[in-house]
Length: 231
Image 1: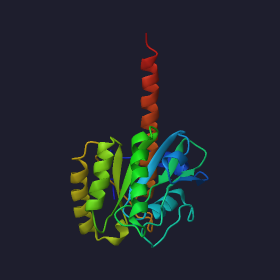
Image 2: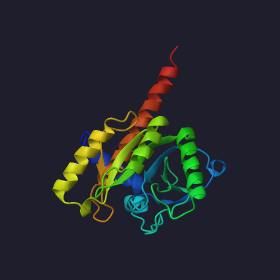
Image 3: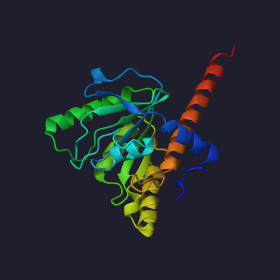
Image 4: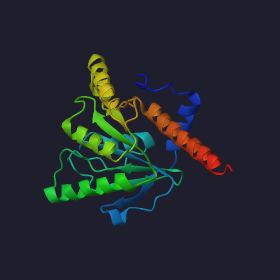
């Protein structure tokens, strides 16, 4: 399936995305407080979503490393911001799942505070990918996260996961509803990514989309530097 709402990705972009994620990705650090966040270096993309939406599975699939991010059937297993690096210009961030967590309310409140601080103060955060289960579509917990991203003026994009588990007609309807909702949000990128970590559907396109994002940001930074040097 074509990436809904995006300009067609070129073969060069697909290859650039493949190379970007084919690097040797490793666990870099974990942060449970603002003070323990790693120093900002290069660009970061973060993965957010309801508990058990498949964040860890998608990260593993994108990087083709089965055990890079821990997966669990227990909602709320990820209790920190987890950073992964390949020593290059990009860092991947696995955020705590929201909407439900098998943890005390005080702990969940601490995660929420950390996420708010991270989103508002991480100037090298290029985009947050908000994962939504294609079987269920947007839920109220997703709306709360999207509201937070809009308030923090953080660029974000919705990624439908587990698309292999949905009939084509149902998936098309979910895409239409989700895309319409995304286009009403000021900080949202007005296109969707559709993926399945199990079947591999959409992974090459998502890698290419991330590569395109980094290229666009680098071009914008060079343009800004040139304009700043003008008399």
